[in-house]
Image (cartoon, rainbow, N blue to C red; front, side):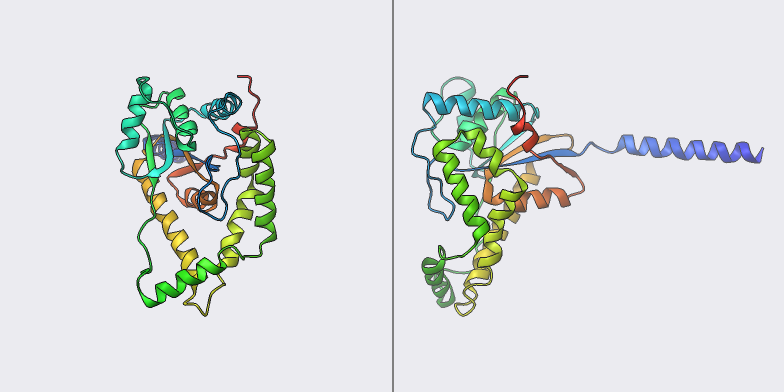
Length: 275
């Protein structure tokens, strides 16, 4: 009898545990995809493309990227455009209706097309600069800006420089898929992030200009991740398309969050084009 009661209790506890686990909402799966800008912008890691993403050849390459990412079956596609700006949702609806021609921008060419092929009813812009942690008009702020203007491009970082050089070669001679495969490797992500670790120690006599810049960068990514969390729901399968420089921090945030599952995009990007 005693043995029977013990077995019954063990079975009951097992059933309770099973029910509790079943009652927990499924975790959202989040895939951070690091990309580059199709059109050069004013930043340290600017692109060097010399052709248009709207050409027939590049459009085929974009389709190859979107086809692979669509196999993740995302329920939401998040893009690097200003959070809360209704124009992107409005344009997406127009695009679905066949009344909006997508411009030569990665957020549209990758994001809108991926959302459409995945059957997503909406698009989600999540970019922001966050709050500024120093004032440009203060005496310290002016000294910091002066230092950044002079020394921003003078960082000696062999890892980052080698990564940027290879990326530039892929932009000029490879396909978009070639480049994304390279950018989303752990080695490339780390190489990009290493630049900030070096710059953090520069400008100590100029009101810690390096630390201030890196702190502002980290602050921005904290706000971006908050925006990401604001649109994620349990069970979602989310693709986040962001400049590759954001990838290191955003992936860390996803990995640390017990409610999320980090999904590596590389297996999808490396897959064959055949379904």
